[in-house]
Image (cartoon, rainbow, N blue to C red; front, side, top):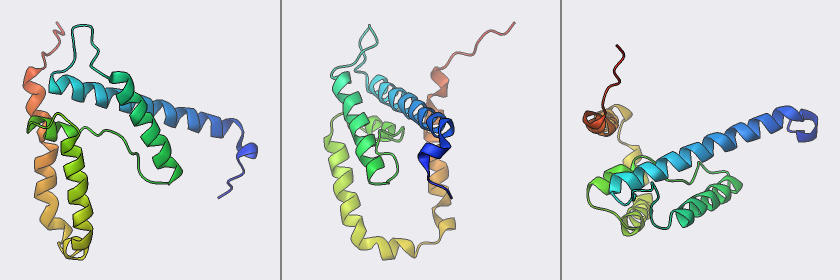
Length: 141
């Protein structure tokens, strides 16, 4: 694979802008939907400290990409924590601590076969479908 960026020219620029656009839309949609889900969006469509939230997410994504890790951003799975009552950063800190503790148990978790965790993935993926009853179908006639 040739990593000569000046030689790639416009192809590199197109890929960079595409990834940047996708990441911005993903970040914006996820943060806004989680704020709306938690009930903090006001009548004008804004939520408290939204600028800080978006800037923090952008900085996290940038630093994460420098280290070559997967995107460090808000994920739609945050809705599960919000549904259980987590509205502050304390739930995220608690989850992070649990992940740090789980590092020591990684060999035990690795011994669990993938087919044994499939049903959990199905249950988690069905979670967003619960909110479809709030959507109104468009009148196509």
